[in-house]
Image (cartoon, rainbow, N blue to C red):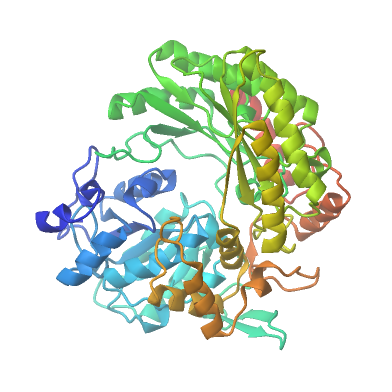
Length: 609
């Protein structure tokens, strides 16, 4: 946003609020009829590392009659300064307050950013509650992975775009173009037209009823133009890669170029929401990736490019792709996130140029093989130890291992198995030199649209007991351990699996100062506890209660394409600790994308050429 030097001098990291980065797009406000503010509810350095923000920025600005500008949540120092100076929150490009735009679109990726959205709306001059907006206010829209259970935030948004946005953007703009002219449409008429776009959900068009025990009883449209089931949008062919991103002046979290090489994952980890909501797998052809990397480097001057995927090592022909990039750009560092835990990944990373052999990161997720079968993380202890041994033999000096506690069916014995496994990993290092092994623990969060969407989150006392046992056990091995606050995971579970009644809790927590909860120095669980108490709701009802098979889920009206029968079948297999094979190397698992998977398999050969 355009702010005075006086304000910039008084805040940390003023680069968050300045303008005119390389390849930022500035259009004339007066001659461009459609104006969109792309809002990311976290700090600039987080939002500018988000590929979706850059994609949407390019998609909207590609249209001659549309301008899109960016806005990020200010840190508390800047928010305080704006309020003290009686200044609104505006966009980076023009400094215009959010209330002046036709559309304000938020990207929802993490539930603990929910109150940041309310903060940005209020600072931008827009009523926080959708019910309080009139025809003079912009439409407030949300998309992203966390929007696939829109109910907790339904009070604050006019509509939600569900699924891939690349095809929805031009359809949305076509509707908005029809609003210009002499006959101005009311807000209700605009929402009626938007609801006709496949994949768009308008929460005010639905009525909810609850049972005496608090469970959801029914969910019904209140008019003929609101569909009873809203289907997630899906693009089968990945659109052209984004090669003209805005290049920040300050360092951001992922300070490198990004090329999405693959969308979706077929491995079927039962706890993983991304593996479900981004199905089916769609690969970008290798030639397109190579061209995109070259163009990106030329346009932006990056010396590192990340090949983005949920499981990069599953991309067909990844070795040849990496080799071709290295041959064309010998000085370019290549980042390969989300590698599967095997020796192939170690060899792949070891082949990269300009790679310091300091540390590798893998996620076994569970210490015992039984529990890994429960969550369908199909990797044996022998595979883990062989991977570690290969890494150390190839010169890597350390490993970071990610585990979860509180997984379904987990016992204290499973927690202690983490200690035993990590100790064995450490012993695979070279004789006479102990490798550095670090362990990170996260509390399991049951998420909507996953196999474990109905299970209860573990009690805090059980989580703490298991973490203490792991901490004490690892201390004997001299291994560093970090773990997340289980209260953060509790709140994440509540906000991700909640219903529409949570809107008043979120609103009350924000009023009491709960902002930037994703940052440990700002998280204050007492404020949330007070908000729940004042609203007569319990976090345990949403997070620590098992949902019965016939209970109506708050997100049941959102069709992501995966069959309920698949979830039920996979839950039974989890309870029996029976793994399910990757459908790309085995018969189809009948998740609901059978036709789409068949189409994708036909394209595998083309993608590898």
